Amino acid sequence: MMDTIWIFASSIFILAATCYILFITSDILEKTGGRLGKLLKIPEDVVAATFQALATSGPEIVMAIIAAGAFVNQEAWSALQYGEKASSGTLNMAFSAMDNLLGIGCVAMTFMLLKGKVKKDDHIPAKASTYFGLFYYLGASTFFAYSIMDGKITTQEGWTLMYIGISFIVSQFFVPKWLEKKFGAEEEDEDEEDEEPIPTKPVAWFADLIKTNFVYMFLVFTLIVFVREAMGATFTMATVGVFSLGGILLLVTSYVSSFPEFMMAYRYTMADKKHALLAMLFGSNVIDLAFAGYGAIVNKVPLEVFTTGRMPHLLPYYIWMLPIIAVLLLVGFATKTFKWKHAPVLVCFYLVYIISGSVLL
Image (cartoon, rainbow, N blue to C red; front, side, top):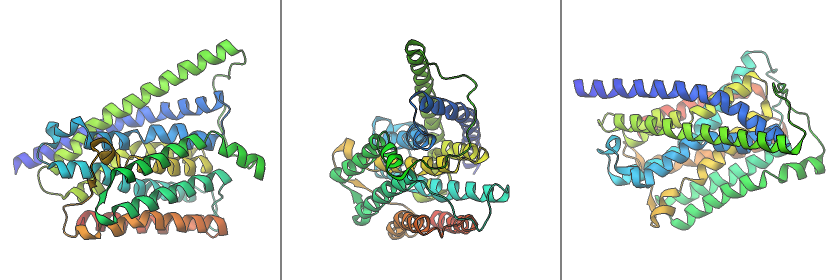
């Protein structure tokens, strides 16, 4: 009993310390990503959907690599079977996607509502680039949900998910500009003034770009290092047998890996950057799901996806909630029936989803 208490206490301390460091890092990361966008003359929502989404997806990507790669036998995971470790990377992507979409996105929208930044009966605006990101998310989540219906992800399915993510990132650099030309410039969110002006001379501009890129990559590396420690802490708790694999993923791990998205969403909310918030969350989810089949790609064998809870056969139904929510959002945006007052309702649905999943899966 004392050993169990000690494991939980030490793990929680590690989680608290790493999350605090991630909190500090995400503040600098937001400014660095924004400056990269301004140097390259990329709109704020595109920056959020690419640079910020890539950076905040770092923890989930690290989780997938650790679960499938050489670090799978580290001490923190020693009491878990190989199949559990491999499956955890995929399930973390799925549950993190729901955390990002409803647990972070709708909570942020509810916060905007409570702070009086928006009116409850107003519809939530969506730019053409937001629809673009949502379509990609719908495609990725639908294919992912379909892939695991038989309880595994094949190597070919893993590569398909990866290609969807790569296609999304590449397309962000030219499709939004094309959409702007075709449909006209749209209203931008409020933006903060740069403390340091963008250089106009080529040499100074290039030096600024190199320096900013170096800082950006260093911050992403910092995320990877500290999230790896946090992942080890969460799975140390899983080894004591109190929670199932699905339970620990839903209750702790997916929240830790989604922490950078949470901090970025908080900053976008405080700055009243609605379009950037949506772009970051949709983009982050597409990139997350791109690595859902990473284990099958690396090991070149089908990746079994399962949980160890009371009703593991319910897992596909939980996963299918991802594309269903995406369809509802798409219809709501298109018909202008998705209003700010609906965000708290989705938060309530999310709580039911998480609590029931942690018990049953």
